[in-house]
Amino acid sequence: MQDQPQLDPDLDAPLWGADEMAKVIKRNKRQTYHLIKTKQLDVTKKGALHVSTARRLLKSLGVL
Image (cartoon, rainbow, N blue to C red):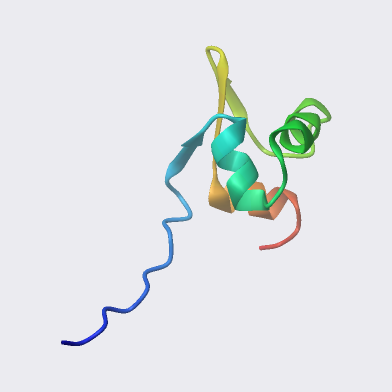
């Protein structure tokens, strides 16, 4: 049986909330909230949640 290749995660899938975003940018939740509050991350607020994509977050940090 052949091993299936590891697929890269979709960089344009929406990430809802600081918890999901923190995993992508390899920070904890508190650090992520600080980056959101100081507008260092490209996020949109929808109701009570922040939403973004991995591509937008990584571009904000200069990784992409």
